[in-house]
Amino acid sequence: MLAGAMAGTAVDTALFPLDTLKTRMQSKAGFAASGGFRGVYSGLTSAVIGSAPGAAMFFFGYEGLKKTLTAVMPDPQHAPIVHMMSASGGEIVACFVRVPTEVIKQRMQTKQFTTTSAAVKSVVHNEGVLGFYRGYFSTVAREIPFSCIQFPLYEYMKKTWALSTDRAQVDPWQASICGSISGGIAAAITTPLDVVKTRVMLSQRNPTGAQSSAYYSGITSTFKRILAEEGPRALFSGVGPRVMWISIGGSIFLGVYEKTKLIVTRDS
Image 1 (cartoon, helix red, strand yellow):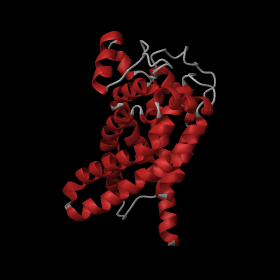
Image 2 (image 1 turned 90 degrees about the horizontal axis):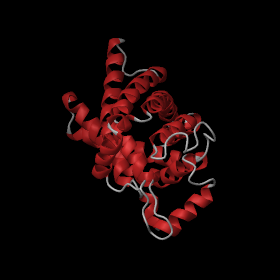
Image 3 (image 1 turned 90 degrees about the vertical axis):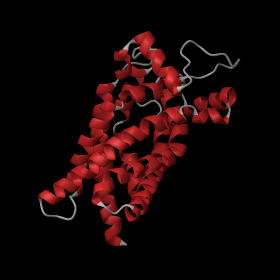
């Protein structure tokens, strides 16, 4: 969990501007109206607050499930299934921590609010406590396919690289490269789900409870609406910054994670 927390914080802080640009490109208002290149660190506080516990909870679930499932399905042929199920479980747990801070972060990134406190007060006043979990299911619907692509590919690449050099495991720098490649591939494939998640999460009710034309509610209805109103290209809005952010982030995140895990294991 310590390794995951350290890795998550390092990534979210270093690459926050890319995440902001991606979010603004995906918003209904459009890139320029959402802030353009200005204030790319808006929402950083919320991201930092959620990154460490979110990443820690993911790896707590991932490593725990992987250990349990490997004991149940020890055959190496079942490894991809084990990694997919472990990653999915880790994401479901992590999203309970991640989504509330993500709601605040994205609304600040798109200039809906200028301070964290104003964003929090608006959610509480207009949407109630459940408003902090707006987009939970769309986030899970994005994260599970993403992790089911990234982590089996990541583990396969590590194993193949280690076997090719007659070693039990790869070095952290090698894990970093595996994380970058697997993350970039997963990011590109799941961009439409990320666009849907962003639209749902950015939607908010006004004080009277009314909904604006930019209000999105369900995963399927949001997907169909974007496709009908804006065309297929809109579902890949922000794919460039997303792939760049997650490729670099995957390198840092998994490299730092493997290095920290190595240190913690050695010292314990």
